[in-house]
Length: 139
Image (cartoon, rainbow, N blue to C red; front, side, top):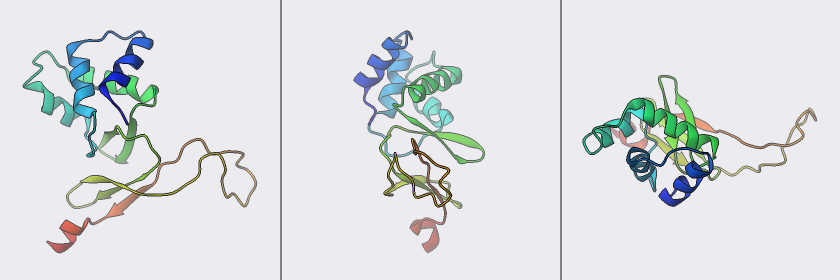
């Protein structure tokens, strides 16, 4: 799980400047369970960080993703979302309210059940489910 300290350490090691806006982005992502888009992070922080730009959000998220501190989710065809939980799990997106949330899913990295014999090892996996969440199903 992403923490501000891990993020700062990684950014420093990557040669990136540690700025107030980057720290604000790290704080915004730390311990988050929703899956915010760059636009959501920007809107959440703009009032407190007037110098923040959407480009800074994208570039910082890109750096964090390269360091495996967050995952970039392409679950929505119109925008990407960021997930600070990098442990293996799946995601569900409600087609009505567009909410994205974690779904427990067990899979083994390293070995794959491959009847064709073509896969030597699995390094990463993304599982996306789509449908209606319980709240939208009731309404």
